[in-house]
Length: 484
Image (cartoon, rainbow, N blue to C red; front, side, top):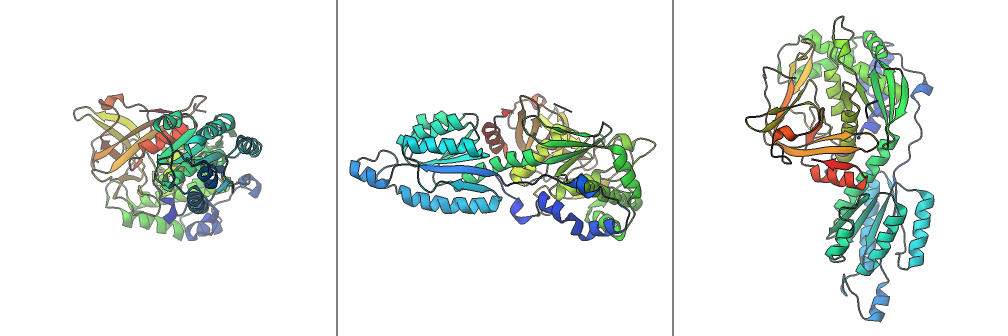
């Protein structure tokens, strides 16, 4: 195996909900009831029980009455109502907990003495939560925060209201691996972003990635991430595609492809219908295995004798519905799309790297892309139906991205010392009728390097919005080297 904020998911169906309800969806139900698809036995599709991410949290400050008795407050000062802030923050944290579907257990009493801090550390070591949330309301309690982080050694989000810490305190943790420090005025949005980062790592540990390839069937774990990768023989997909009948549901999907397209160039209507069959076959095998994402060694089956049509429209549909789907069984590319989907609720465009040297722009292209680049609940971008550029047949999407759109490009590189390549820029143009390269293409600026040829990686995921800073923070929190 090859050695992985803006929230869009609130208005759309997340991939886990989609997988749970897929069997009752009209199109898939029609396909399964037709008898054309035989799913794996129930035991084969079973998954371990999934628990929500758990975060332990605490406020750290002395009771205000003791400060009044002493007659000196230090930062944040005499007008700061620590107890009132705790009450208000706790209510907002409960709302975050509900929105993200995770558990954030905040201690009711603030940590004040060394003994209370020792008790908290002991409880954290025993319960082993996925992360910590520490909120200090007094500069003098900063040593307690540092002690907890040092001894707990788990991802920690620290929220210090502006005016609590001085710059030396801030620099203690600002770039410290394993920590996301927020020094801001009541920024609970940043706290929610930190909680989402902790939830993402926990969900990656619980996720199953399906690999359709010609390697020996089996299951392995991605180092450090814990994501399970299950290999399923390509022959199984070949057989499933052949046995998938052209039902009314398949015809409806093909009609949706045709009606939603801005233009149809090479493919005949029969090619579009075959692409819809492939899409249903992909969904059925994902459902059968209980997978959260998939990748496929898709090119061998396109050569003569053809084993299946290009699955690129199916990959587009899966990504549009919030299910990461990786081309050419590229593990790192698929893990990156899983990260992006969990963190931002956005699909990724996996692509081959090139450069437009005269304009000093990055150029990437591939024969599939999400059309709903703003997330499953958003309208699609314009799509042209084309043949597969390299195979010369079938139906694939050519998605057109708007000029000026901010984008982020990332690639998680797995292994014992993982790192993530992170770049940002703006769309310059797409070439609707490019003479060469894959069908969906993008020419974009790169902010992080002077020479676009210095851009690293292949099959990076491009997605909407400038999320480079958030990705770097995520990497710091989870001890991943960030590279630009």
